[in-house]
Length: 184
Image 1 (cartoon, helix red, strand yellow):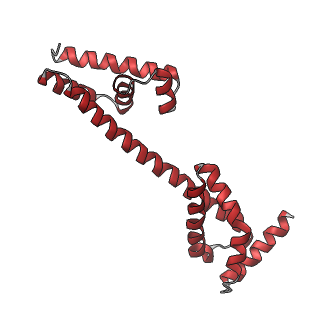
Image 2 (spheres, helix red, strand yellow):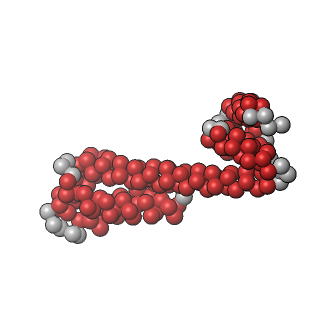
Image 3 (tube, helix red, strand yellow):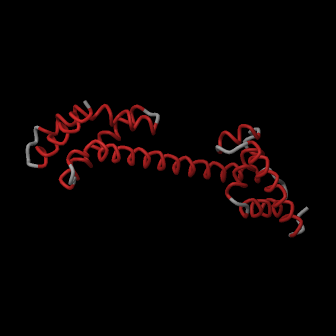
């Protein structure tokens, strides 16, 4: 059955490549649900998966004339869907990371505003900003947002041990920086 489907898909691709526009709706009918399923498997969002499938069809229509082996349409098209899905997830993660960074900066600023000594505020902010991004996040989540180490591990997708280690090293680094600059 798979071989028959592959042959039919190959024939439809050849027809479309030859200028028969009626072949495309048949390909869409045969593959659209698979595209949506593949995209959903990656994104876990039904609406987004439908958008990705639709966008994938646009790409397929633009590039199908370059497809040298029409019988390989399925794997070729699913690769397009998969890559678009991965790109969506990466872009979403970047967006979330930017949002977290902005939120962290705002909360750090707000926390520092509560400190009375202006010089200490400035020194503390400089010390925190000199930490690695990982340490900044753990400090923020633990002290500003009041998350437990277990919750921090889940949020950052790291083990509890890694969260503890990062918090410990962040504290030690801050202590060293504060002592080195005589801010007590």
